[in-house]
Image 1 (spheres, helix red, strand yellow):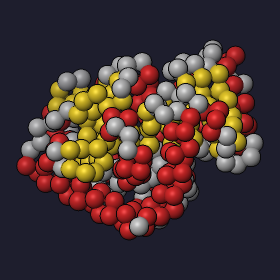
Image 2: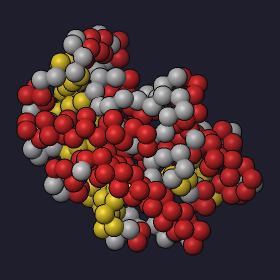
Image 3: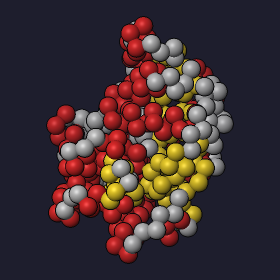
Length: 311
């Protein structure tokens, strides 16, 4: 199995590293426009093989998309990262042109590939990739909900003082500081609702911390996070390549699901060899439905801004 990652920055390189040492793919191509950058990252990763025991072949390429030919999955991380004080929405104008060009080049050489979108603003870039290519909606997947859910589970585990892997929880809605919806009502610790262990006040703080999870790290680091985003991408790619059919919150195109149309937004999906195998309809309560509708409106407004820029 072959995975190509467009953009060898922190997120792309971390994704390549995790895919390699977990043996998710047999070949990873890391591509960047900066001369020698991807080659250096790939060589550095390959020099870990004897210490970590992986056999994945990692190749670095400078802007030669022919080397990505016949990729089963292509991950797009291209674009500038968020800087302190910058919203994901402010990235639209800068990253839209980059993403459109990247996707066109990818499909020249891998017309059957599944595309995983990471570039921000992620929901809008996923929508752009879908609309500009005309690909079937199952083959364009935005990564954000996986990362947001991971942060949610981390904050829940800290509040519970229990291992994160014993905690289940999901974040749906737009991948933005004000648009994501941590589903505290459905979160559980080994199958038991977390509301039996945590007060409503604590749960609301967990939700609030989750929603600004990316901005918190950007403020601390001076740039966007990369370890958790890279691992989240690898988790998604693993479910695709190995047909694991995991239920994962992803940004996908909806046509009536959750009472929304013509947007890409985070919803629970079954992810397998065909990409999005199924969208799962969670029975939301009235408050959650209202939050989801508000989130969808915000995502739609960003799409409108994108259309204005491209027109």
